Image (cartoon, rainbow, N blue to C red; front, top):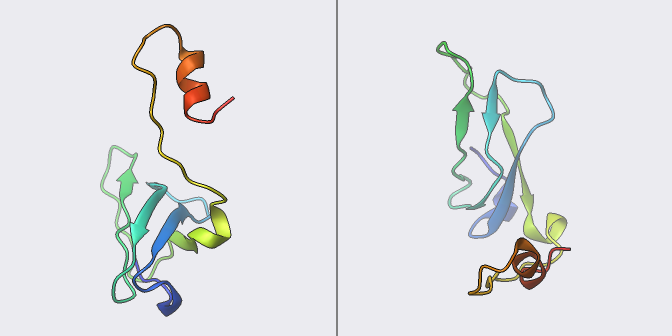
Amino acid sequence: MNTPTRFNNQDVLIEQTPRALSVTVAKALATCKNNKALCKVLNMNLYVVTLKKGLKLAKAAGLVDSVAAMQNCQPPTTDDNNSNMMSACGMR
């Protein structure tokens, strides 16, 4: 996908546009190089879908605009229950 020049050499969050399409775009973190970023598309139909050139499938958002904080998740080594893992990863 094409991205604005302000995102060159930066990580961006790729999200599907709110338009209803016959395909789905994966939400992912991607790196922009030369105004391009990798966008994965899933065809959920049993038939071939042809996409027109220039169709806006996804949008790129800078991490400053959309992500407040990121941290590594280190789950506990014991398999007591799921509450330990969720609390270790900052989820409650």
